Length: 439
View 1 (cartoon, rainbow, N blue to C red):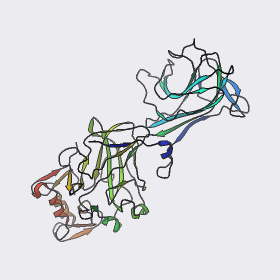
View 2: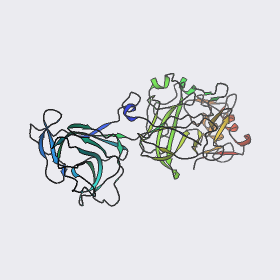
View 3: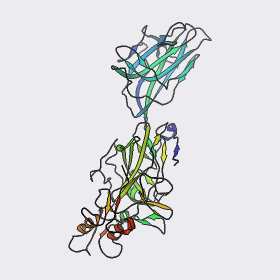
View 4: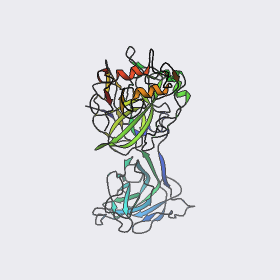
């Protein structure tokens, strides 16, 4: 099974109206203090202390530091260590170091300047050099911005590790250089989900869309219902809220049908919940964020995950394999759970009606089993909801027992929820059960 993965350009996407600004500036330093250079707190330098130098970008001062020639070593290579500054490490972020650099030395020479975020041992002074250090060739006054990259967690073997920014440089001649206007920014990783799903309860096979009866009656709550039902959350996915405007807007995929739940699960153990989000389901099966945005965002580190879609009174479904969150920014997953040829975990995890695959309805007692007879069955749950002693009673509202999601819990008569539950059972046999296909 092939999954559609599209790389998302963070530079253009994050910060747009569809996704609030995600970039955070975590450090700045312009080295200007009334014409006198003074080292800012927490900076650490290697070798000879820096000296004040006129700023190459016009006005003020920059920090001048020696850069040794080719006979010197830099942790097994050319160059010289420049400086460190401890930064707050965020495992769900990518980092960018921006700076101005100027050659101080013979005309025609050049210096290659590298900048990156890094871990190092505060006792041994050994950094853990990894990928992401993009260099700038400096001939006069040049601006460097390596671009965003990932800084992984504390490396093994560095028990006193600190996280910070490192500048280093190398040259083939004995020159020096100066730096100024240092800015460190970070952007969070985001897994972006644009998939689709269908619920059998409100599904109309004639239009191949779902009823928005709950919305029409003003019954959809403004806060996701799953946390209140005791469903666990992970990586911040809890308590999402929406507005009446979002609920009552005619979106490109129709009106809002209900809240649904999305999960990311561990690639080598899909019983482990890694991240959750609660989203809004539109009539054609499209999923949108609670604020109406088109992409459902997960705060999650790079890796591979199973994707799960769930609803409060339907049986959930999971992808039949794990998929990788790609660079940059997490990338985009697009998995149409409503298409039968896109596989799901287990056997008969969805109900296929014509060209659509639907989540099985009837889990009024949300235990992962649709059951009509015997102990802890869903049919009795519907009967109890309407009063128990009078099967012809009905109640209105936002209830788990409202299997067809028309805003009315109904045990007997036309359009009742009990019959819809029975139709979901294998062979429509009352003693049969339908078990949710999740590990």
